[in-house]
Length: 398
Image (tube, rainbow, N blue to C red):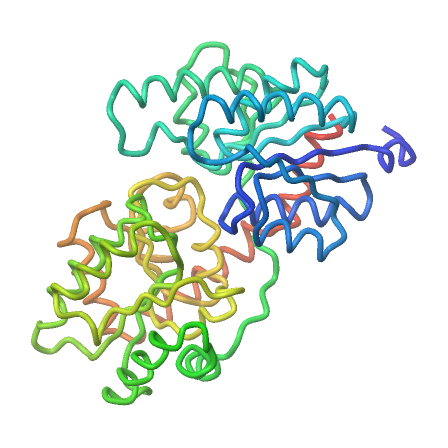
């Protein structure tokens, strides 16, 4: 394809939610980069941080008012016809679908509207989540149909690709392209801790508690364990809190606090665990913080206790911040973490293994430093955003 033709290429990205998570970060990185050379448009559900970030980069967006994560037959039908209308009006050369729901709806709408190149990125599979068996089987079937309707499916990890490799007619339709990390300018440890303690009026209560804990236990000697996570059952945060509740009473364990950055529907349940386990001065739910990855240097240990993942951006961000990581051995996480070389892997939901891993890193500063350095090197070598962008562009132009 000639350079002139490339410049005229029109790419439509579609994603269900305009919130900010791994899939949204992925769309932002690709759309903002390609908008400098192609005609790029992003269709998304509602307003939110993704829409704001894209428009700040002068990327055109269209909100689809009936596109939501929750299932509603009436809204799905209206969204489908909205998609067909938009696609016929915009006439994109490539449609790039992200997230399970828009994957199915979007692929069908693209076929009806006559789009020749339909790309779907699998950021994980909903059938891997804890659901009734019949529901998981139905979702698996819908994912299979989505892949068949698309020209190419991008899996963000080898495990994601392997999860559907046994299905009929899949061969040759799936390509693995790992998520890539853009450079992040972050605060120093001292500055990040000071800002988390003192600079967020919207988080006044949590900040005051954090400042109180840090002051009482000597801010310099307290070890900060933390994560950035949606407060959702899939993230395994109840396991983390129950483990911490047991650890805090162990003799010889260094003073520590647990900082959880993020928001979600499980907040009430997590707050109940904190209260009932006497963790009010140990575990702190800070809520959403803009550009949270910039504050990762405040931590000494990063945890990711998910029950299901594909290839999480937050793990790449933690590694880029030189943090030692303890993570569940699920999805594509083992493609980032090599056991005891670039982090510690534990079985999802296994409190004994999680407790042992935290205890090891709490007690051994040298081990924390070595694991953090090794992970940072692996992220820099194998998970660059430029590699992701170049491989994805080849699919667009093939």
